[in-house]
Image (cartoon, rainbow, N blue to C red; front, side, top):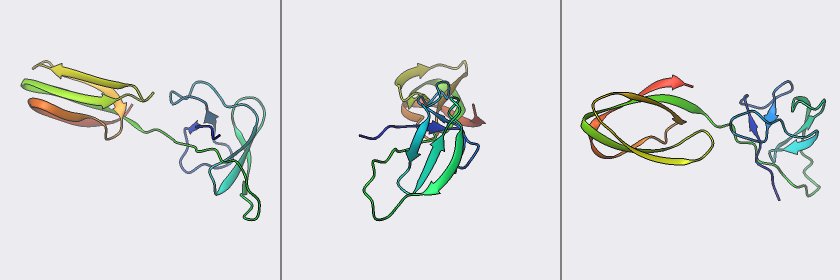
Length: 127
C-alpha cells in the first residue's frame, strides 16, 4: 500500500521536505520513500530529504506517490450572481453562489469552475 506524501518542492531533491498532509504541516516519519523512479531517505525527524538515489530495476519495491499540490488565490465576482465549485488545498469539495461583492478563495490550481450565472473568476497567483 502506498502513502501519499506532499512537498514544497518540485522536482524533489535533497533538502526538500515531505509532509503527510497537503497543508504541509505534519512531516513524514523518517524512512525511505519512493516515487517509482527515485528513492528519498528522510532523517532527522523533520521530514527533510537527506539523500536521494535511483530505484533498483531488478527488485520489486513498494512505492510511495508524492503529490505536490499547487494552490492559487481566485477572485470571484458575479455580474448579478455566479455559481462556482472548487477543491481546496486539502482536497475538500466546495460550491458557492457569489453576488456582486467580490470574494477571494484559495483553491487547488485549475479546479475553480463556473456552474451557473454570470461573472468573472480571476487567478491571482499562489496562496
